[in-house]
Length: 106
Image 1: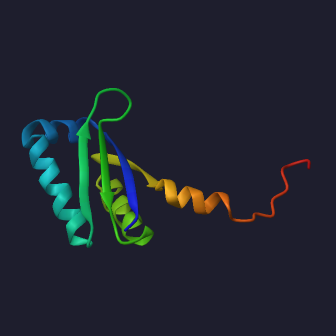
Image 2 (image 1 turned 45 degrees about the vertical axis):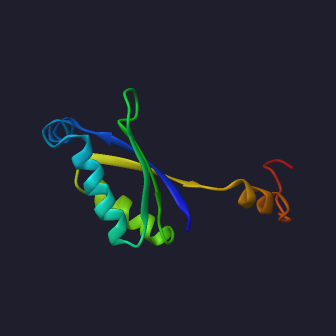
């Protein structure tokens, strides 16, 4: 099953809700969302700096990942950036694919 990294950014309302609900409460909510789509929550970490939370999940497909992104981002209290994660074996397969590409000006 494909893995995805979601980077979460809370606005002030989201941060207030997180402070009220707690980290484990958010983890439970994320787990419920992901499992409802047939996926699995692998990890959820909170951080300081530019990103407030990192979430690694397994989801059935890109459509499910896009659905999560749409659902979360339209709330307005948190925005997420989605990153598709690849295994070393997937990268091995990618490096052997022939690609017909011409760079700009080439």
